[in-house]
Length: 285
Image 1 (cartoon, rainbow, N blue to C red):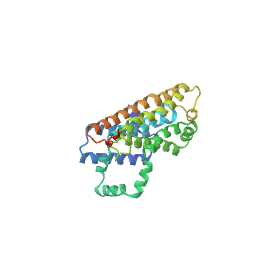
Image 2 (cartoon, one colour):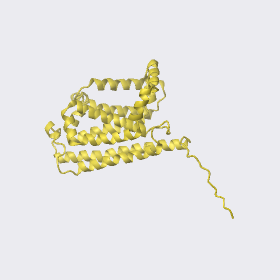
Image 3 (cartoon, rainbow, N blue to C red):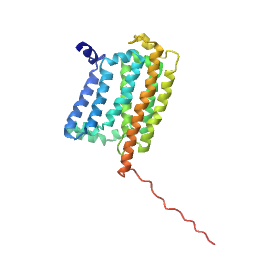
Image 4 (cartoon, helix red, strand yellow):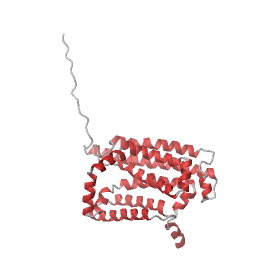
């Protein structure tokens, strides 16, 4: 029993970079949670999200993701949709900052007001760019030739996984922003509509994969499949995973955005439209 558990815990491909970043983020959150009052639900969301990231990237689960298409789609949904949604829904920014030493917090505040950061954020955190990247990365890495290259080159494979996770964090960060615009980067109404817009091309792509009658990803046959099942059955399952669970997660994100919108409205924090006086026409008899 212990040997089976150790097999799953031990990373399929060990990464010092991932381990240092993961442990560093966890350490900062623990320190910050001791200094701030963080509701248990938010802490639970953060740790569940972090656990999903670790399991998807740094356990034996990654072996199956590299050797079976539908397992790979599960990994991508976890990294791109579910884990980022849970982490961002925990609103960990203030907690992570509180975990930093005072000198680092001062430097971080100065860097946030620098011209270089403002110029970078104008482009990288632009809602249109973030939203387009969120959808584009799903479709790009789904192209059979790109999938083949990623599976043959470990550096490209890691770039694929990291890009999916980073784009997911950036997207849910602007969608679940609890502030009005400004200072938020997207209007509350658009935050609610955005998941419905972004899930549409994913549903279409999932349907194409689901109903395809040819093996779109023979690279998994070359690498060696993890399960003895029909190729098209595994591809069908992968397409359904892209189609249904991903859409459900995005719907949940839209509901969370709606909750924030209602809260802002209830607290009177939404910008009011200026009321223009009616123009009266004077008629001469």
